[in-house]
Structure formats: structure tokens, C-alpha cells
Length: 108
Length: 112
Image (tube, rainbow over the protein chains, first blue to last red):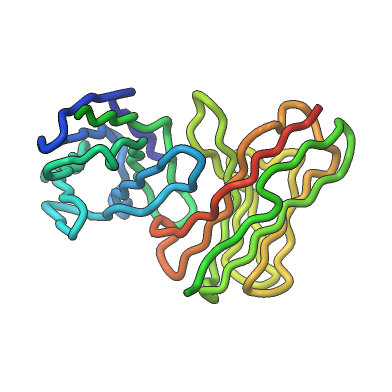
């Protein structure tokens, strides 16, 4: 079961780009990398998923280097509403580990 | 719109009582999951199901059980509630890859 390491917390000013890095040294060949966002008193919400290189959607980008031992979630021009906990997951099927996430606070 | 709902949203129960938390999804997803969330632990998988009559144990399954009699529902039962089971419980469902899951709003359970 591949475990992940993320910074516990981050602060950013409104309008800046935020990059959250996740370390997953024992990622398996078939594992995907997935990021979720969670607001207080709500369930997690899927943001983005990737296997290698770069994935982009309307919300974020996910950068995965060739060795896949880490990944970076990039949030462009954050707003106050992006204040949340962000989880990096690595796995496939039922075998994935949520971890404690990164608490992002966006400052006006 | 399709959705996933949990009930109740809040519950207080006494130690030793049997408690059932409901989870209902209208996406017709085959995969359903139960997690608990505690401070300092993130979300931990309790049980999961890949279809009707299929149930599997997760990381923290002791003291919990589930049953899957139809596609829409996966109730979680605490056979004999303990104070250590005070937590926020989340149900989730997914169509294919379990990592792309939709979560419910959660049930806050307090065992006194």
C-alpha cells in the first residue's frame, strides 16, 4: 500500500499560483495518482488524476516526473474559496491511502 | 441530478448499542465505500463493495459490517458501538476506477 507524504499546511495570497507536492517513493507500476479537495464539514471532492507526465483540467494541473516518485498539484490563481484540505492518493482499485492531506489557506 | 446521500447526518448513541448508518446513491455505481475520518488520521477505509452481494474489509474493519443487497445502498453497521468509534463517517461510490469517487456529506457519530 503506497503511502504519501505532503506538507501539513500552506498559505498563499489570493491570485497566486499554488503548487502542492506529494512524495510517494514506493509507488507501484499500476498505481495512479489522484488528488481530492475537502472543505470543512463536507466529503472529499475529486480534482484530478494522472499516471505520468502532465494532466490538466478546468480546475488544476498535475505534474508527474518520469520516476513517478512524486507529483505536484498546481492550482492557478487561487481564490479564498480554494481554502481547503488537499489529499494526494496513490493506488489502484481499493488499495489507496488518503493520508492527512495539506491544509491550504488562501489569504486576501 | 444523481447524488449520494447519508443518513442520519448526526447521531449520538450509547456504548454497546447497535447502530446502522445509511448510504444511498442514485448513480447506479457498482463500487461503494465507507470511510471514517479522525483528526490526525485522514480518511481510512472501513469496508467496500464492488457489486451486489460483494463486500470486503478495509484497513479498519474491526467492529463494523456492511451488506449489499442492491446497487443503490450500502448500510454500515456498528455491532456494539464503542467510544473509539466516535468519528465522522463518509460513504462514497464510483463507476469504474475506485479512486474517482463521489462522496456523501458525512455522518458525525458520537458514542457516549
